[in-house]
Image (cartoon, rainbow, N blue to C red; front, side):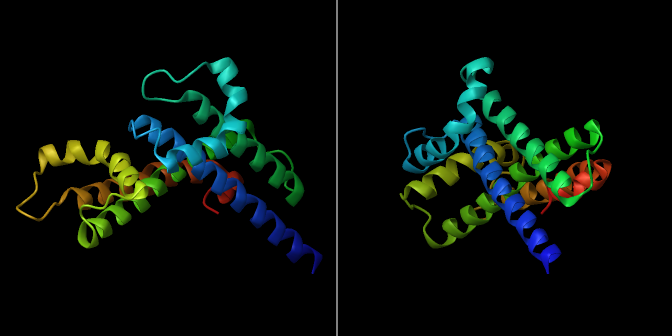
Length: 197
């Protein structure tokens, strides 16, 4: 019984860490896609993640261009610490450093791909039910996915009302997830088991 409670506790901690990592990567992607900083949802994401990101900003400096390295570094460190803590509590001891680093990078990549995957699904649904939606969430999703959709649209322009670019992007996400992230998770050994949870 104690072991089951311990496993449930570890799963809960890992889930909470992954949710926070999801928010950090959302902040990173919103910055990278130059989404509206003053959108209420952008403001909420910044407010929730700022306490963790602030220490990294002090030595990595402010955002340069599109990429917020402080947020990326923060996500990497939080996931690393979480993996080490979970392995210690579960009784596995210390994993090799390279496995830890690969596992943390895989977790960040996994979170980024999930954000794009869900954002694309919401964007497709919105384009059917509310193509001119002005809700802050709808605007933010459009701003988030546009940088990855635009290059595909240049190669495959919409056929009348039919836009095939989301299908191409979904296939690309699946391939990156299966090949790149999958390879990283396998390379991380025991640490990899904690990435996809």
